[in-house]
Amino acid sequence: MPRMADHKPDIAKLTSLAFMLGRLVREGLRAKRGTPSGSLLRFEVLYYAKSHPKPMMLDIARYLCVTPPATTLLIDSLVKEKLIVRILDEHDRRIVRIDLTRKGDRFIARGIQGKEDSLKKLFSVLNGEERARMAALLEKIIGGKTENH
Image 1 (tube, helix red, strand yellow):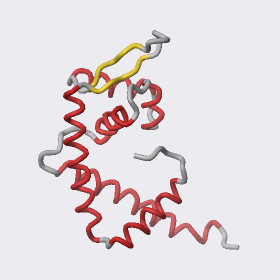
Image 2 (image 1 turned 90 degrees about the vertical axis):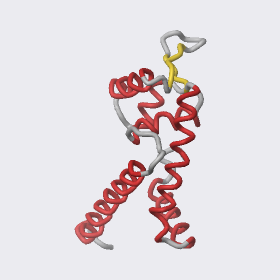
Image 3 (image 1 turned 60 degrees about the vertical axis):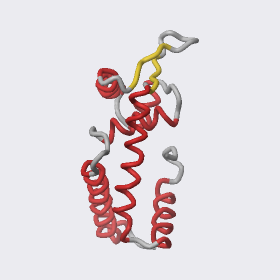
């Protein structure tokens, strides 16, 4: 059975490649003309709110793997830009939920198209079989630990 030390170069290389892939994705999304500006984190909040109607603030914090205070700062900026609104839960007024505004819905629609265009370009170096294999490997690594987009 291989010892852990035997895998160090592989793990280091995979870690570095994962980081570089993340950087390429972020750069591609920022460079896309016509794509709404803002961080990927902001985009993910809006995308989450669209795919999970009226989520609680805590749901968003857990999804993003950030603290509730960090989520509050992020939500504050989105409220200020009128992309989302805060609403009180109908059954428990202590619970704060968020909802997309029309402006937020338009923003996310443009952002989704820009995101898809950028990712198509990034992964165009792979053929269909390679993309399917990469997706299968990433799904194996992630293994149900996160929600599907």
